Length: 149
Image (tube, rainbow, N blue to C red; front, side, top):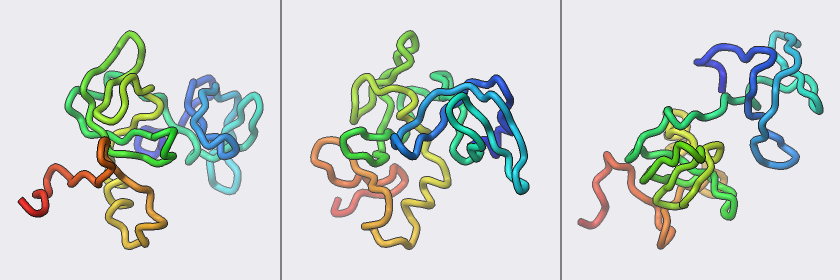
C-alpha cells in the first residue's frame, strides 16, 4: 500500500487490515522497526504489523464523479465494480451505482494490480468476483465492446 507513497511514519493515522475481523480499522502508528529487512509497525494493541497490511486513509479529493472504482461489499464479501454518482464531502461518503452512502474506507481506485488479478489465469472460483448491481451479471470493462450487440 505504501510502496509508491513512501514509508509510514510514527504518529500517522492509517488503516490497518485486521485479519481476525476481516476489515480495515483506523489506528495510529506508535512505533516502527525493521525486522529481517521488512518495515514493521506497532500499534496500541498490535505489534510488528507488516507494511502490506497498512494503507493511507482515502481522501474524498482522490475521487471524482463518474470514476470507476471498486467497492468492498459487506454482504457479498467481495470487491465489486462500481461508478461514483455523487460525492458527499461533509460525510466522507459517496453514492455509487451499487451502493448509496458508501463509506470511503470501503472504496478503492481500480489499479493495474486489480485489473491484473481479474485477468489472471487463476480459476474463476479462486479469483475475487467482480459483479455489477441489479441482475448480478459481470459488467464489461468500458474499453471492451459488449458481447452480442
